[in-house]
Image 1 (cartoon, rainbow, N blue to C red):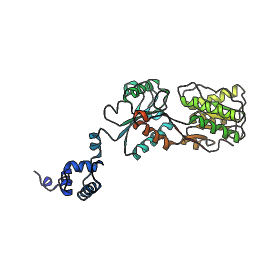
Image 2 (image 1 turned 90 degrees about the vertical axis):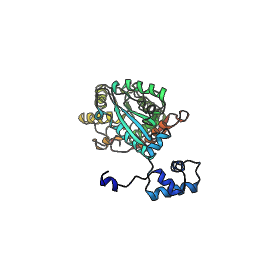
Image 3 (image 1 turned 60 degrees about the vertical axis):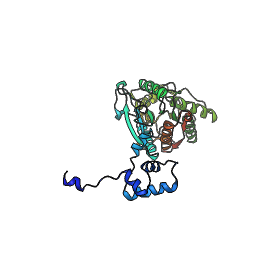
Image 4 (image 1 turned 180 degrees about the horizontal axis):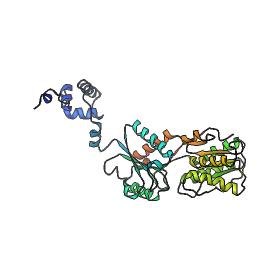
Length: 342
């Protein structure tokens, strides 16, 4: 034995705590795990002994013995063939709020980015790697959503944001109310010919709900709603640009634009500027998602933003809830006022 081994202090164990407190080792274990079978006086005696000796409970090991891991798995779905850098910044905001919500409940977050079939894995709970799974990301990756929806049917303990399916345990923004907020704000700025831009028939269920909110709000204020403008493009930004080109080519009349997502609205702002259409003097523009980049567009983009903190909390709560306690949940939204509306 080396001299350093002789001088190194022996780690404190639960046996030492038991001797100091005058109780059994099993009583120490139950007292420090919060068992209701232990009296308050005994619990306090054990806690004082542990504190005096500097004994630290291995919470992870204790959790595993109870069948808990203390971990939430968060899967971020991307587009097949694209890396994490190409993921919509909205999902990074949602990822951050979900990690924060997990930490508030004492859980660690295990994050993975999955886009291709060979990467798909969702059986974290069955493998005892996590107590629940949150899945977020683009609805355009059909293969990924098919896989994770099938996982949910067999494994449970999963919550989804962005799911193209209504039969999964989803959490979503209050998209219809967001449509109302956008229309009412555009009308307040003087708009009378308000156009919705986005594909209500796409895999993005939230686009359909935002369009429904637009239709109801237009009717409520006595204005004529139009068909949604659907444009093609390699990404949302180019779709926004192309939507303006379509409207200009058709000589359409519009003084208000409500975009299904911020990325499209940002592309539209660029195209409007290029065509000499002043924002907000000639047309008011509102997006949806609350992207921070909208603060730096020209002009800064007014947007409907979900309560990200609440979204993270609901995703974690839903993933950890039992089967009968997981209804579909809506996250409240609010308007972020910038300069793209009068």
